[in-house]
Image (tube, rainbow, N blue to C red; front, side, top):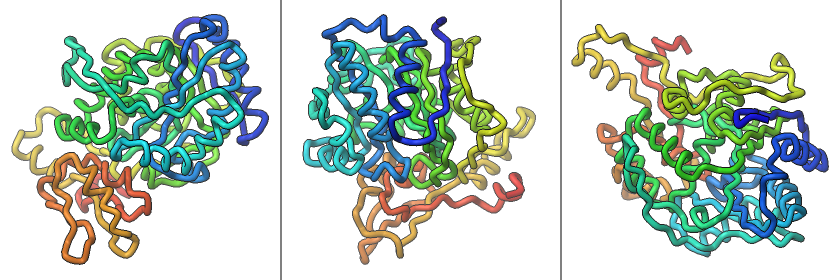
Length: 378
């Protein structure tokens, strides 16, 4: 098969059928024949936060477990890793692994959960955004990286799949600093593509048996899609998967940038999925719905954008005062009031929705301005 072959096969449940589908994808893609026995494979999973798999926030442990078994049969050493947006230390990661049931994913195998949180700076001179950034040593030192993402919508990037998943190779709270430096969506999307190109995963898989629609990547609704996706090209994989669930490419900054760089190109699809049977995903409330033409004067455009800016809303009766939102905020504008509940400086908000993304209790909503409602009609 060519580099840009995308595989998408039906898989309705997290059961024995997962192994059958994964084995078919690894076999038909040719990956089985390319991996050298004895080498180390790092599975870069999506562990956004410590959340039970039933909420579809994270990569399901059944996918990870069956993939480990298949790789070990090929003689590979396997490490499972991610870097959520919190303080990166053993106690925190142990709690995340346990909540996401990654401890169960490695049970009965020779695979290890990563506890090496060291990192080093890498250089990417051709980058149009950040030319230097930190990446986890565990990712950099692996012989192969297999990207094991989750099919979800995303408040800032509209869609998160294979390419966006590799942003988790940046250590812990350092990610917030990148958000602050690159608060404009197109720049942030370009940075994510840079990271994906630098890591260059040998293969990417998207867990779409159960995905998330609406206000993802953590506060949306679980949706049964019943598909496992795979490709050697994370860019083509995202182009196909997002289109299949009805998300327009022009709404996804990472895909816009990937297309401009010529990273998607033509690709073939090997599938048993009938597109007409796939439910279109609801978009996040924060989605941009206005693309103003160039003839609109700059001052008027700026005023319109200001009044269409989506912002987080703190729901204090759901809040447990855990301060995760304060810790993650790239702009450092969230503080706790005298009662211990979060408040923020509205005008300084960069609308990255990191706070919404990491809130474990869905105590942060996304406010749609009146002007945006008028433009969108919803």
